[in-house]
Each structure stands twice: as structure tokens, then as C-alpha cells.
Length: 184
Image 1: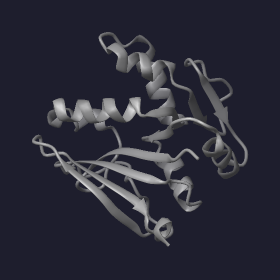
Image 2 (image 1 turned 45 degrees about the vertical axis):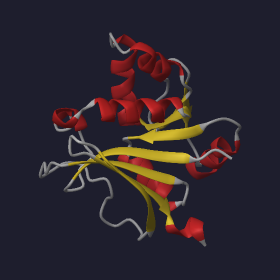
Image 3 (image 1 turned 60 degrees about the vertical axis):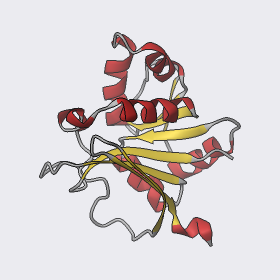
């Protein structure tokens, strides 16, 4: 069974919104290798509408991305949205209706794991239904003060178990968590 892996850029104050505005100063060869390896070990992308629209506007025409860009553009993409009527980015499928049931079906398909990037609202929904198998938080040593938080107020409490840490020379630390309930 495939896993859903939430991979998120996040600040010390828990903000995930607009990483293009605060993460660049910490980018390094280590970060690039981590994201490259992560993408190539995955078989699909899972995105909410807002993240999908941003990625779909950028990746198909971005120059100089090499095989990373080719992989981003060629992977199957599953877009969870109640408002989108079409998804023109190559290999994109819109998911509506019973999202939890659709995610279970996706996980049951053969293939490599599914990467959930950005998509705070979708991540919260999947977290409520215990559908995220791994959380990879790319913690950046910066405080931005405002923006969309990774974990919104009011979500049910979830215990997570730290399974790996990877500090980078740039100050980024990769924190990998599994749901604590998976160990029971």
C-alpha cells in the first residue's frame, strides 16, 4: 500500500504560506538533493486547489529545471477541489466528493508513495481522517510573523512520533514524523 507523505516548508513560528518569500536564503545543495530524492522516490503529487494553481502556472514553462522539472510535469497529479472544473497541467485529475474515501483508493493503488505539498486545508482534512502516513517538515530558521499556519487552530489533537532529523549547514532541519497511532 502506498503512503501519503506530507512534505512542507515551515518557519519556526509555524508558517507555511508563501515559502518563496522566506525560504530562498536557506536553499543549498543539501536542500536541492533532499527535494530531488524525495520527488524521484514518489509516484504522484497530491495538491489542494491553491497549491495546484500555483504549481500549474509555474512548472510547465519554467526553464532550466532539468530532469526535476520533467518529473514534476510528468508525474500524475491529484487535485482536491470542490471548485475546479478542469485541470490542464499534464496528468492532472480532479478529486471531488468523499475525499477520505478517494484517498484510501489512491493509497491502495500500486506504485510509489504520494507526495502532498503545501495545501494546508487538504492536509488538515487528511490529518483528521488519519490518512497521512508521514510528515516531512523542512524547518527553516526564520520567523515571519504572519501567514497560514501549518496546523490550524481547532484541529483535533494528534500525537506524532519523531523518526528522523537531518540538519543542513544552511540552518534548515528536516523533521520526519509518523503518526504515533501507527505504532500501536
